[in-house]
Image (cartoon, rainbow, N blue to C red; front, side):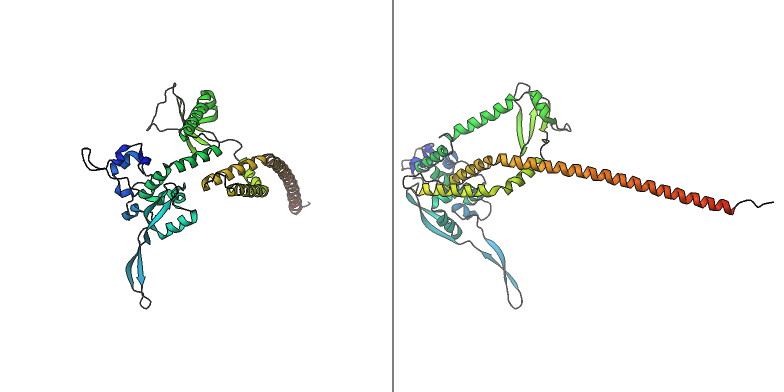
Length: 366
């Protein structure tokens, strides 16, 4: 167990510096280790310490807490306060990566999920936000301990090689940051000024950006960025073709039938390869990642069909627009013709009325 913590020897020295007693062994139970030594080695838990139902930090409770409610009488509907406690057990679960049994306080719901996923390691290595949130501090400690074992490190390396990434994840982060900086630095100030528009500021908060430093770019929304340039704060202009995206998405949704079939076939092929004894076992995340990459590739093959349908849709829209304009012109002509007829009729009526009045008011003969 001490091989997991070679980065910081302080975690194994839980006694005084000049003590003659033997140092305590490192425990997989989070609360039995020295908190200062743990803080040096263990990365901080992203959701912080538990504030309510504090005993849940000592085990895998799955986010369950005490629930409060009422007991309601049948006859008179009288209410009396009561509580519901989570169903907690102390169980010894086997970890394949540690090759040993781990004694944990577990809720019944977490036990069912562990059985469903196929072991304690699979439950602790879940990457969704909800899973990490329900682990708690002790689950976070167990997760980190399992990730330091050679079996899990070998598994992560295999997943990276299958995805075409470097064996060391730190290299990938450095390469991505360098590419992002290069992409921003390659654009000249003239191009940035053409592609962006200034943001009106009230002068309460001003930041000066020297000309020798690269442009700082912040992502606000998909396809929208805010940048700090030597000329001040600027934002990206909306593309003139933004109306085409929802139409293309609708067309793609109509042609997803063959893509879904191909993805199902690819998933079956993966399962057949996994059933072989010499094959490297894939995790749920890596399997889902490979299937999503295959789906993206199949969608890219359908891109010319989508463009052809979109061009047909555009031609239909243009025809409809021309028909609408013709109808408007005809309506205007009809209206103008009717108005002219009505004015002529009115003039004739007025002339007839004037002629009648002239006959009536004619001078008498002498």
